[in-house]
Image 1: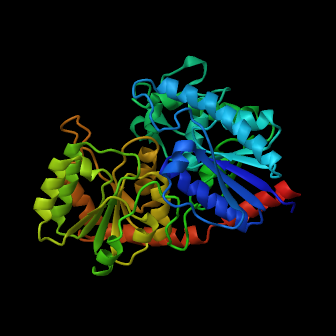
Image 2 (image 1 turned 90 degrees about the vertical axis):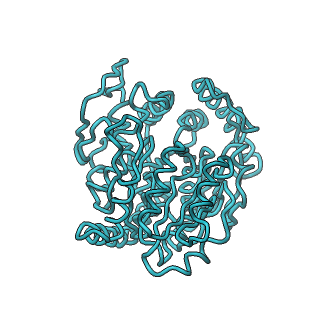
Length: 452
């Protein structure tokens, strides 16, 4: 194999940085001579500690908002500026790497960076799209945006009641990635996903690296589309249970000591990722629902300091009560692998979903937006590793009530009969399959083909 230099570019969200960094490490372990990991100027400045690895270097490109300040009222302008400035600065980055004696042999680009494929094509550099969502989600995007018969092609924005594709569950509208719905506040991202699919159609050798593994989504991978090379290379999760590195948030230092004081499988871990911001009313329902179980819980709340009233209420309720510990951030893979943790209450982001599968951790799914809705359905209906908390249908407020939270947690923790035992059995099964995943074989074959 020749000495390959991979350039990996990702947007600056934690859920994109983590799998991209894991891929960088695996490429180096698989024989790559050099990997350059690049994110936005502002994103790189926010990373607390850059992970060190032989052959790994860091770089940045601009999204047009290097100070992190973006307009709140014009998402189209943000995406347009990102594409314009990002394309220019990525081109300059590749040119500078070549001048320094490190020409780029292969470019890997992540979600919302569809324009990077055009840069690579213009510079005669082969590229691949790193999909940090499920194969099922990619199948849905292809179904919606391909130029031949895509649902959104030719300005057809009428959605069917159910989407039924070979190898996938039947997804109702409310189970689809939320931004696909025309009136969704995040619908401005639709053109970006359309560009992802249509750039792959223009590529003479289209390639998608999927953060999944064959056993998990075998039928979805087989049935997506014939003319795109889909390669499952996941789960892109640290398998040594150590912190992934490159965190955008400062982790607490006390949670492991607290977990060490608890019996095995006795703690509920609660985290809604790095992006979701829950309504105050929903936060209160979660808090009271957790307290009512009398089960110890560890809850990650990123911006608790910004809400003095809610913070005061929590402190008052937990004063002298060792049931709950609230922290601003933590190493999730470390927590999920801790013997005292017995349940994960999660937003069902794809990284969190994979991390729960690798850890064999049963989940209570509380999806908020994007592909989280699909993931929660697959957790419950396809893999059987958890249950989804249901919204309060008496009111259209999108709130999961405290009684529902209590019900779900007690089921998954095994306090209410056979269902919890079945979930835990399935979680153990998928842990074994995730550790046996053939994805490393797939990645090696991919690299060998490039170096042939």
